[in-house]
Image (cartoon, rainbow, N blue to C red; front, side):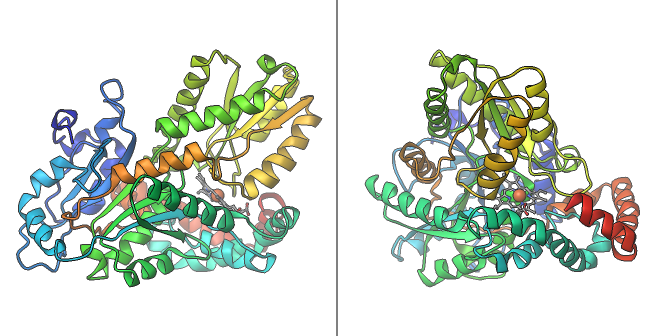
Length: 491
Ligand SMILES: C=CC1=C(C)c2cc3[nH]c(cc4nc(cc5[nH]c(cc1n2)c(C)c5CCC(=O)O)C(CCC(=O)O)=C4C)c(C)c3C=C
Ligand SMILES: [Fe+2]
């Protein structure tokens, strides 16, 4: 790695809020070292990292000879490298030299087996699966964030909401053939990635781990153990990072790794987000260009990016970088199109909101109505937070939003397909994996708490959460009228 491309160790206080929270969760009572991955944001003009990855250096290594500080957390940019297998984080290795050298000697005695763990959300495969799938989703403290005092309500609340929402969700899944195609498509992407890595001279086992349905992350990790993988790259299939998606899956992964002697010594790197990668941006621009050409007057088409939303509190209170990354992502795609002389109007909106809280705005449905009223006649919808077809593209966009747009005066509707197994995209993911491959010498693991716990450090905010959490719990659990209202209006 080019040493000059690293800007040095930044003081903790200069990290963006999200990384401060993240770091704080690791740092409790332990020395913490941060290497400048966060400086990526500020360094965009100087160098463009191809993706962002985290490497976790172990505190509970079983090696008696280890002398690294406990709980040290190294986060660094991943750089393009030609040589597979070299350290991707020179600064980290520099800091933890003694540890690295000792584990290097251990690992040289073992056969090098590379694993790639693809993370995705998962989806119900039959209508029967819908309610238990929804239960798993709402039982996630990174999806419904309750104050610590009220976490005992997580499970009953998840049960209640999943039962109330299931009928509406089932209708949606029924309309797309009775289940989510996410597992099939993610498996196809995994196979394609394996082939692409092989074409680049890297033999790797590729595993799929889903957060809320089969095959669960836990199952994938067990297989990784059985296969005796010696180096692991974790690749969430979300281009942009959100606490609710990549963050949640990483938390699960880390809690599994923390408890296991073998896994806690496994060198792991996590690709946090990859919306800024040249290959991804180009692939998206290609798909958009191709769909634009299907319109009678391509230059008059509004390019309408629609991303999955998150509650505003994730961004404002918890420092979720999702909105920021989404906006940067759109900017990069639009620049790429402009470079090709495609200068259409564009707009970003957020879809799929759930529940009574405020979500990121503008809302997709409201914008579609406004655009129709303003006289937009041709619109190309671009799903931008997903890389595989699923209920929110096939039902929400293709059915609900299309109908709304046509009713609002938009006459020509088009939709860009998701990337799925597009070869330029898969090749780029393979490059991202190769660039992120951890050194065999790095020992890795992590011990974060959930993001909801992390933000509870601010006493006033915590008190407010307890207060509002009490009201919410009271209303949800004891008010039949409110349950009826939720059922009718929100779910
Ligand atoms: C970037 C992608 C996603 C974000 C961010 C996200 C946040 C988020 N989602 C919910 C609630 C639901 N999500 C559901 C399904 C679902 N969501 C995503 C992606 C993101 N979610 C995917 C890929 C899927 C799977 C779709 C499939 O084909 O099965 C559902 C279930 C479907 C439904 O009933 O509408 C819910 C509910 C929240 C609350 C949230 C952020 C806090
Ligand atoms: Fe979702």
